[in-house]
Length: 267
Image (cartoon, rainbow, N blue to C red; front, side, top):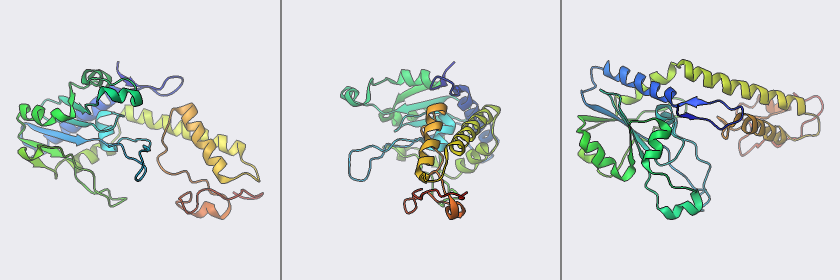
């Protein structure tokens, strides 16, 4: 069965987790009186970014709504779900074969269809023609405000979208509500992340001593999470404050980068 797994003792996350999420979303949308028959959900995944004007790539992390729906870890993708049938479509970038020098093997859509257990896979530059062949009554795109940050979700957009009827009001509250209620498989992932995080905290507590720098504790925490848990990313910048720094809610930012020397008696 397809799954995301980094080997060793890391958690194996089944593709069925994301298939269930899609099914839950479709069930919820079908109960919404404003959703027409033959509606299609369309989401755009995250894109690769570079460090300012350089060609140095920033380590990619998938956009959260897209990941919740498809479990895809690659950048530059789109995904669609037929609300009536639940059929899923993934659109992946068409990369030149020459890119293999930098990126390794360039995989065709069929590879991603199997990897993520979706019903169809196509190239991104085929999205307009593929969706047109489905004759959707409306494309449901994601647009809404994150109440913590005040930022607006990136709404899916592609060349040729103007030929479709698009609704960007319905999807956001429905998919956000789906994400509030966790499935058993999602709870298992949360238990795993909490376990690894807790063990990493214990490693830090065992290692800390006067004279060390706060950033050494940050480094140890990140190392444990990645080396033992397969976690390349943390949810937010590590807060490794000692002494008075412990009372600063978002300590660890660029202006206070976990750089204090830990003194005897500090907490």
